[in-house]
Amino acid sequence: MAGGTVGVLALQGGFDRHQRALEQLGAEVTLVRTAAGLDAIDALIIPGGESTTMLTLLAGCFFERLRRFVRERPILGTCAGAILLSREVHDPPQPALGALDITIRRNAYGRQANSAVRQGVFVGSPMEMVFIRAPRIERVGAGVEVLAHAGGDPVLVRQGRVMAATFHPELSDDTRVFRIFLEAIETRRELPAKGE
Image 1 (cartoon, helix red, strand yellow):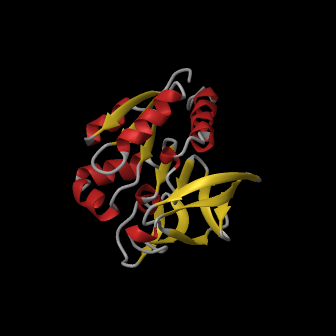
Image 2: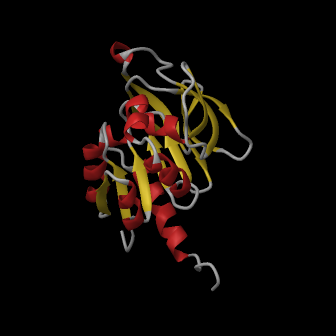
């Protein structure tokens, strides 16, 4: 990937697998553990894990700084990251960043024992998807594009520069989700800066 640094939020969850997947595609990656770390990156991935634990670790100015960041830069949230990016969270309700006009239900497919590899469709092509205590997108706003679905449910969505997947692309050999995210970063970098 030419230019640009991708941050991976590394407070909890599967950040290491995301880092490896991105580096295999040639991305420059840094782990973000503080609000100040957001200043050194061009885009961010919020990985899977436990969304309530992440909220606790993001308390105070970190959460507010992240809320501003997701409105300015490309973001990809996977599983718990998708929950944090949503506008509305159910079961139970919890705060979120509101970057995507979606309503999401936590652990909608069941407990850890109900985790599974499912066949889905990504931009018209088959894709194997790993679901672990996955959330379900229950409402998609008018400005949200569905890029992938599985079993009739939207599982990968995009609104502007923000993407969210309810599955774990970092646990698959299929790199297409990360590739389109990196392409979005490159496209944004090619746009003229404000005032030019």
